[in-house]
Image 1 (cartoon, helix red, strand yellow):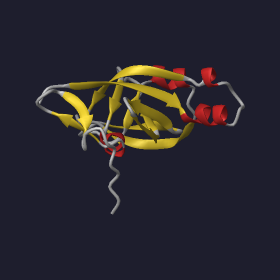
Image 2 (spheres, one colour):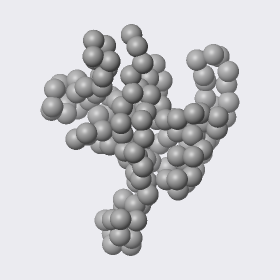
Image 3 (cartoon, rainbow, N blue to C red):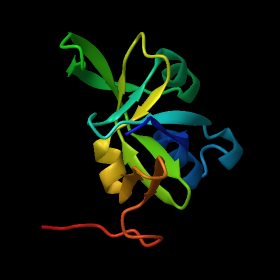
Length: 137
């Protein structure tokens, strides 16, 4: 299978709450649209220092991160980030990888938004078509 990218919008969740509470204007929510590498072998949302700074995210802790090449590193874990793709949205903490060249969209946010990779079209698609289905066990 080839490489799959998706255009997503990232929003600072704390700013979204402040806007809902009338503390800041909707236009003051820090957000950005990015081209993310879709990686079903990765677990979470991974961002670089530039995205971290532009979104003005807070840090809630650190986490040991394992890379595909076997290397391990302690990385910062952010407060929640809203991830928007087309008509779908989820909020997740992001792992800040210092030397990362871009944004990586992993399996947990994909699952939460009910998305899968269509290998024939090399595209991100809804697992259940246009309807978002949440599986509860």
